[in-house]
Image (cartoon, rainbow, N blue to C red; front, side, top):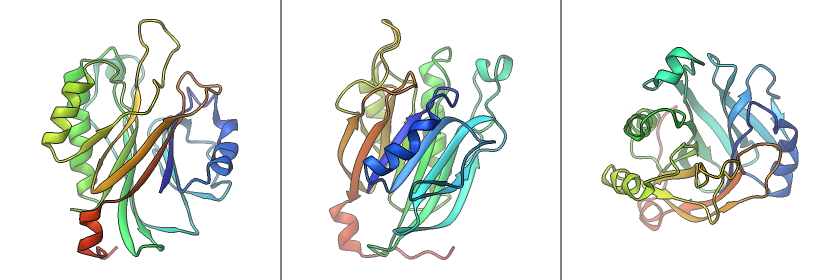
Length: 235
């Protein structure tokens, strides 16, 4: 699977999506800070699975209909930061989609995630990440799962990796940092956590009109998953 995650910076980079989808032969596109009131139903060969509805600048997931079918989608609220409560409420910080892969006859959960901003504590973002993983399990317990997006966690990622690993997930950073707008806040803001999948690579793509660079994730079902055979759940 080839997946791009992109924070559009208040929808400024929305004009780049068709080119990204076609240039990188995408299977899934996960967006953050997109204008959900103006999202097209199609981006190239990708179809809109679901988007948040309670925040104008929200999250969305697109998928390639030739390869996948959407079985279930859900947007989720997570614990709010003070920034969310006082300044700019973000009611939904996670949207997940359960897909069936026609090429492999398998099911997989893919999600777009946007953690609280840097004004919040890392402990709150860790809480949001763990809660997001728990919510995604309700879409398909034991299914291969990939959550990508803007984690707003450029510092102390080693500690985060350990805590994510303790919960049965892997954390994968890209080959280059994804945010370089400010000298102080440079680093890997956008990455991926996954379970039941082998992450073959995460590449930071060239900068566009956003202050974040998009990341391209290449993933495959893990050898253990392959030995178990297709996972079938009723929709």
